[in-house]
Image 1 (cartoon, one colour):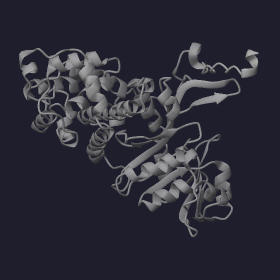
Image 2 (cartoon, helix red, strand yellow):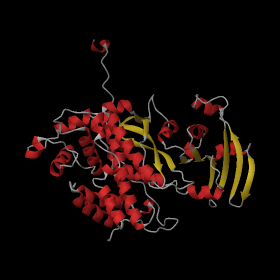
Image 3 (cartoon, helix red, strand yellow):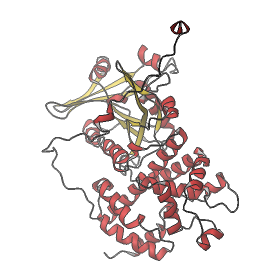
Image 4 (cartoon, one colour):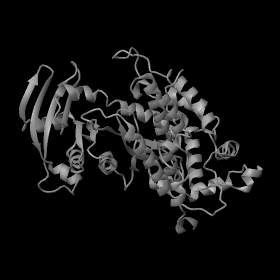
Length: 455
């Protein structure tokens, strides 16, 4: 496939891909090591990303991959030049544990900021972020069970720690911000809406937030506007009707009704979010949009666009569910089996980096195809990325450019089929765990013998 001079220059800039987004060597300034150390901060980050792009890669496999390819991030070292570096994973494991979480978080945020900055704006030159919630189950380790308590029912407590996550994904590219997380159960459980309010601080200025009915409450809308963002939230019918009863009808058609309303918090809103000012209120527009005979959207927004425009926009909200599947299932983040909270967070954050790097590669392939990034299959693009770019990490721009060009050529073939508006077969849920241990309960400790029992 013949490339233009501009695309050839892009291949040069994409050498090792990460260099186009962030200077990894800055991590060494945040976490300096001794002068002759091999596993510096940027090398450990490089290896963590490799492991998340190859979820079946062990620590030992990552070390051997490093020795075989010797990327440009490696420092000068006698053992490397003489080929005597041990393939034992102990040093890497220790360096991974010593790497501060703040460095991993900084790195992940830098990658995300760079990719979001390149994403196409879809509404009045502004970026739209899809908000949703999900969960991840972790390894049955005591430290994780303490931080993220398992679920329980009348039969006892499960062994699987459960993490509650709220995610923000940029609509046009699918780029993910770092998720906000907390305990799903237990005394320190945190709600998705509280996590969502915390995550809004990380959004670019003047963003637009779109979410399903679980987030269609006053607290989420108020926090968005307080931070300078606009919102378009679906509401539960009962909540919508309580607002509509006091709202003013401003337009209607056979397919919609639009109202203006001054939204104030209810006593329940104030109880769940006690920090709300006494005079808190929002000037909002309510849209009742009839999609078909069985579906009506009840929405609240601060945007001035009409019901038809916003209804078409809301059709794209489902994309965040596909993004979550790609992050959890395709990249296997659902099965992170770290034994410590710190290690889990590092693997989660670098999983987001891996997901965004594949998304960036998908965006470049979409540009060659002259289609939107979401018209390209994430899973097939990920397979192409693995096959052509992860097998060998080239240390020269020419060899990298050749492989990158070949990979992009095949990635342009990873386009999604043109599907009908409705599926002919019912969608099925993916299996999360085998049934034999899905309902496994934590064993109760044996009861202590009382002194009187010994008599």
